[in-house]
Length: 478
RNA sequence: GCCAGGGUAGCUCAAUGGUGGAGCAGAGUCUUCAUAAGGCUACGGCUGUGGGUCCGAAUCCCACCCCUGGUACCA
Image 1 (spheres, rainbow, N blue to C red):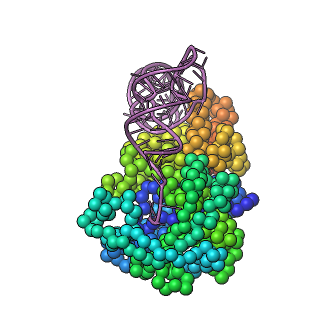
Image 2 (cartoon, rainbow, N blue to C red):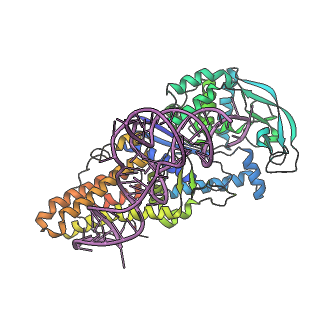
Image 3 (cartoon, rainbow, N blue to C red):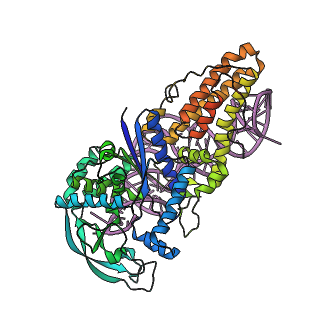
C-alpha cells in the first residue's frame, strides 16, 4: 500500500462551471477511486484560483465585492462536484490566510536561493483590460480587441522577476528522464522543445495598483502583489499544509503523484511550477496528466458563441452516472472530444439503457423466476478476470479503452444468454448458468466502480444474494 | 511564418507496405428472459487533393488544401 496524491487544476472562479470542468472533475475522481480500490491511501485536492485580476474585473461587472463574488462562484463548483459524485479531500481557497502565508514562504525560499530580483518591466498596457499586451495581440491600429479606439499606454513598472533561465538544464533533465512524467507524449515533446528554445526570466509580481490590492502581498514590500501563477500553483502545497505551523500533512503527501490539468495551462505546470520548487529546494511533482477540451457540436465552447454547456442541467436530465460515463467513455483524454445533448442521449440509450441496464434486468429477472441463490463471497477484485488490458489502460489514463473492455463483457453475456436460452430450460438446468451470469455481472459491477460508483453499488446490492430480485431499470430508456 | 499532431463508412474511431475493420445511427431477420430491449445478417468507404516510389500505398516520398495545439511573462 502506498500513498497517492492527485490534484485537479484549480478553476477560475470568475464564472460558473461548464462541462469542461465536469470532465476534469470526473477524470480526477476516477483516478482517485481507482487508487483507493487498489488499496492505496489516496487523496484528491482542488481549490479556487481566486487571485487573478480577472476575478476582480468580473466582480466589478457583477457589481459585487470581490470576496463575495468569488465565494458565490466557488459554491457552484463544489455543488457541481457533489452532483458528479466527485469527492475532493482538500479544497484550498487562494484568498485564505493560510494560503497567503504558505505562498510567502515559497517566495522567501526562492528569494533566499537568490532567484528573485527586481527589474523594470515596460509594456503596452490597456487601462480598460488592466492587462499588458504584446504587439502581436493587437489589431492593425495597435489597439486591444476589447477596447477599440482606446490607445494603449506604455507603462514602466518595477517588478520582481524569477530566474527561470537558471533552471533550463535541470528542467530538461527532469522532463526528458520522466522524473516529471508528462502524459501524453505529445505534450511532453511540446514542453521539451519550449525549454530548448531557451527560457527567459519571468515577472512574478504586479504593482498593488495594477493588482487592485487583490492577491498575495509580496513579503517585505507593501507595494507589490504576487503574480497570480506564482501563488496559484502553490495551492497544491498550501492545501496540504505547506507553510503551516504543523507540516506533517505536507510531509506525508508531497510531492503530488499527478497533477491533472487541461492543455491550456501546460507550461505553467510543466515549466514554471517545477522551477519554483527546484529553486525553493522542494520536491517536484511526479507526473502531469494533460487532457484536451470539449467542443460542442464541433465548435469551441465560448461565451461569445453562447454555446457554453451547463453540466448541472445535464445531470438533472440524465443522471450523474450518465454524464460521468459520457465524459469517460466517449471523450478520449488525449484528443478534443465533442459533446452534444443528442450524442449524450444516444450513448445513454445504447450503452446504459440497452447495454448495461438491460443486461442486469434480464439476468435479475431470470434469477428471480428460477429462485437462484448465490453466496455473497466477495467475488474477485475488480480487474482480475476482466478482459485483458483493463488495468493497463487505466494506468495510461485511457479510461475510454478500459470501459470499452467492460462493455465487450456485457456484449458477451448478452450473446451467451441468447445462445443458451435459459428461459427454455428447467429450473435445475438453468441454475448453473444463471449463477455464472450473476457472478459475471458482479464482476462487471466491480469493474465499473471507479467510473460509475452509484450504478456499481446498486448492482452489487441487487446481486448480493442469496436471493436476487428484479428491480426497476437502472437507466430507463429515454 | 515556423514547429508538432491530425484529415479513413452519416457520426466516433481502429488498421503504418500485402485483399480497408469496429461501435453508434439507419435496414432486414430470429427470439421473448429483459427497459419496443437482446442475437444474427446485409448495407454502407475513388482512406483531404494532385503527383511520385514500388509487383503492391490509408500506410513511404514531394506539393497543395483544411482542422487542432504550441510559438512565453495571457489565465
